Image (cartoon, rainbow, N blue to C red; front, side, top):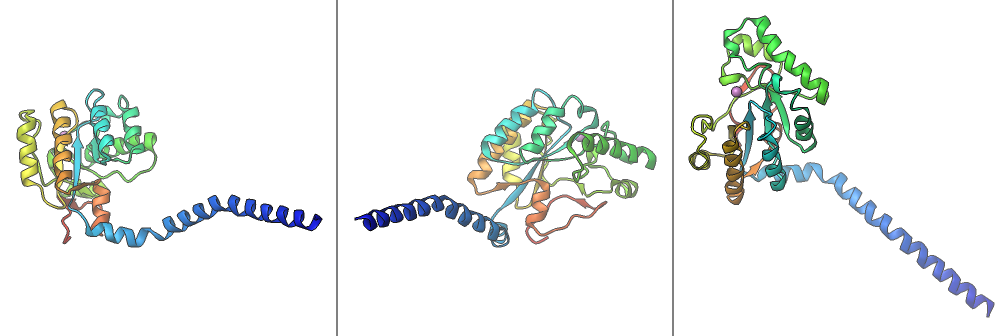
Length: 250
Ligand code: NI
């Protein structure tokens, strides 16, 4: 009878070995899936759309920006924030949170000066003092530039050392704080590849942004950062070049 017990023990041992291997097999399958995914999936996703980039200037602001981040997180949406140097120190935690949650951060100059009225030296300082502050806080990321008031000249382009991001949809949210008007304007005008300008320093603009996200997502739009929009369109943005939108045929 001894050999029967030995066989039963052997079968049980083999079964135990197979069972313990199952989780590893599942893990290995998942791993090889995620490894082979990027190229094909990225091409598939690029064919989808339409895509738009929400951008916010002049922040971060301690009372309004976190409300926006909460709303974007609930909707799984990434945006781009062009921040001001003077708001970096008080907004450190918000800026770190933005990066953690997949948002893009860009430069809106140190003290929100109209760059076209400045000397080359002053332009350099307005851009690089902010770049240094952000690099000290967040590490060496690619910080694109949005010049205040969208004003550029050849000196600004030469001093930027990064792509210059303007916009194609502007509800002038600072002018009336009227969420209903702003939402209607944006949702009527918006097209694939647009870059929308808002300001996260107004509660009304935060509300506008979240309503726009809800309405456009229901119409099939997807919200991406400016960097992601370039990548989806296969466009390599160039330093000192201005961009207003990144349409499908660009
Ligand atoms: Ni501004």
